[in-house]
Length: 138
Image (cartoon, rainbow, N blue to C red):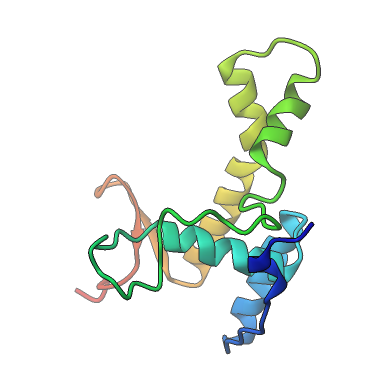
């Protein structure tokens, strides 16, 4: 039975550059989510990242508010992914972690390469790692 909160839905629109919308679509596809579900989840996750003064009476964002029941912020629910990895057999912490992060290193490398090609990120051994390319004109 749907909750009252979900029964009163409305449209929310935003305008973004086409390339950004395409990145969102690709990410939603990677997570096996609809674009609407992806955006709801990302907004909800972002809202949780802000600390608000609890005494502020008209606060539109309540960090304690649970995510809507029809969203799964990381695509598949983490609990389901863990249960799938266990599949009736004991697994170590490292095995579970490896199963949950599989492919992350490849995605990170590809993302860093794209950002470097776009001159948005650079690697500096002298500075000890990656940094934004802002201010390189010094």
